[in-house]
Length: 232
Length: 353
Image 1 (spheres, each protein chain N blue to C red):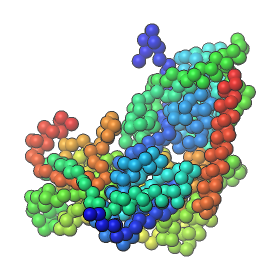
Image 2 (image 1 turned 45 degrees about the vertical axis):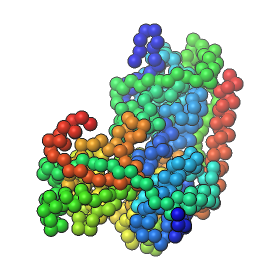
Image 3 (image 1 turned 30 degrees about the vertical axis):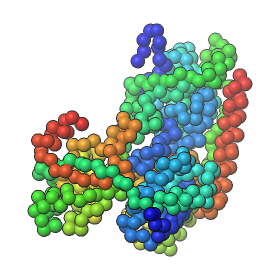
């Protein structure tokens, strides 16, 4: 039985070729469910040839050509898809990510542990027991913003960002977690590293994650990290 | 890769320009993965250049910035230069320093060198060759994303010594080449028709004061600006700073803008968006901007004015002119009509040879 969605989507214009879909009155979890549900529905429909949908934290952005479709056209079709998708719990696939928290790779783990009043092992254990959800992918190609970090592990961004965060670093910033697909500057606290490749431009499906995926981290040893890093 | 039985056309960069990259129409299908749309900054210039040499609209071109490259063409090649005006010249075996015609197809004999020179007006030029720049396609496009180091030619701006493959000319290109060959004489080895097309927007400013007006629609966080800042944004002159590149232009305004909140939950961005970061100097997002962001958006340059924006260079002054959404759409409709008229004119002329 599919209950009717409690809140209707609101579609508004941001610029002359960009609209945003929002669900006023929903909490963070419901909103996320609606964003991902609508995103998937758009990708699976013929509409995906006319518009490009980009999940955000609290909205779904829609790029469209205003000479092909009016805002009313976009609104009408999007709301139909949203009504059909909303109310059905989303099937989310799980992506398991190996994480090594050896001190050499987890440069901020000790600081994070101190901030949280836990031991480093506690931090890792709790982090690995969470089922995160990929809220959106942005900042750089393939960088997943992960929702679901327990409050006890919330740590503010570093006062001084690093000019270089190593590729594969797993980090916490405020109430979010993320993984740096490539070396880049970054201000989040690094608590581990994964040997997996998150983004490969040579592949037709370049990104390990899709918005809406579930992510679980599995602790691995430094030896296993080295072995797996060499083969990717 | 060439061999004596099947030589591939190519061009050689003998002296690299300031910042030249291979671009095409960009990557619209991966925005949700954090990949910038990218592509040619001046889309109209690219469309015109490709049409002039008989290419498809999506063929890859060279985007030149401020100072262009010196390019050697070992084989006969059909080219066209659009976008910003460069003081470009040509050298052939027997002639040196011929002026390079602008906005028209030019058939260069084997062994020519094209010296693109320096801009005289605008910022970014577009050089198309018949057959397109044939670098590998990465994620559906030949556009260069220098920030990520992939696409285009080795994911980076061109350097002296780079050799770029050229694709096979289309049937239409070949017919135009054949027709232009007939006009070649011993004295005139460089041939072009006696007409040209311009991509100048009728709204591009050519006033002596060099102030470019960009029309904008109000952004969702416009009201976060205090009264003085709203006034400053829409009435004063803003300047394009030297912290400007394909990702975005940093604008300076006196006084800097005051905004009531530093950031908001990240959402989708689009080229032309004007964000206000904490330091109060606005950022005008351009083609390689990240597709999501969390800075407040106070205005967005209308699509019809993006080609004008692409021709701005550091030091230029701009004024933002607010218009209603319906007017923005009408301006885009008119620009599209004008572009289509120009493309049709080119198509007819290049086919009638």
